[in-house]
Length: 237
Ligand SMILES: C[S@@+](CC[C@H](N)C(=O)[O-])C[C@H]1O[C@@H](n2cnc3c(N)ncnc32)[C@H](O)[C@@H]1O
Image (cartoon, rainbow, N blue to C red; front, side, top):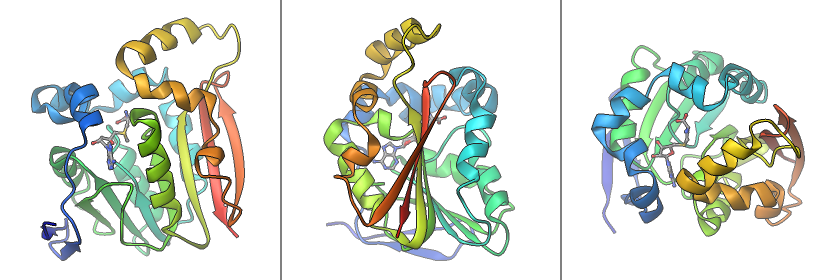
């Protein structure tokens, strides 16, 4: 296995045990969204995230941050377009530490640029299924699970939960099956089937079930916007 060492934003050296490779599901389904530099440069804007989430981006971000205590060690499981990462770094505060990981080098660079001037935040290349760096007081997994096949969802949830400190939380914010006759149900179904096919099993399966009903954690769930979105919180006992 390759050994790599990346320079973090603060220029400290962050050793990684293995060099992650971009997985096939990303290359095949999301090349246009996360790997192609020409599209990435205009997709990485708050207004785009706001539109994709039907105007709910602020509300969902705020709800995720409510679960994260300032001053702790926090992991963001993948880069999110717009101002999510700098806002999370500010929320964590100068007495805390935010580690952001992503599996695509271009996204690591994007995120590093966004986090300039926030010394509490570091960015490194890693697979969310094996994030390393734990234990963390808070882990934020924001709209990541719906972009991966079933088996990978299970691995990522496991990899993140294994890095939660006693009393700490993992927060998963993602799509959810909307209520019957939701006005956006039809268009969302079309988008998911055509562009985001791995969403479908997340609509049918509870995140706690994907975690194998791990009783080392207590689980809570809240839905938003007619059930189109969910926040699931796993708190280590
Ligand atoms: C958080 S998700 C979706 C976020 C949302 N669509 C947005 O940006 O507003 C997108 C990120 O997840 C990353 N990603 C996908 N699979 C990953 C994995 N196994 N480990 C770490 N990052 C991953 C992609 O490279 C991409 O930067």
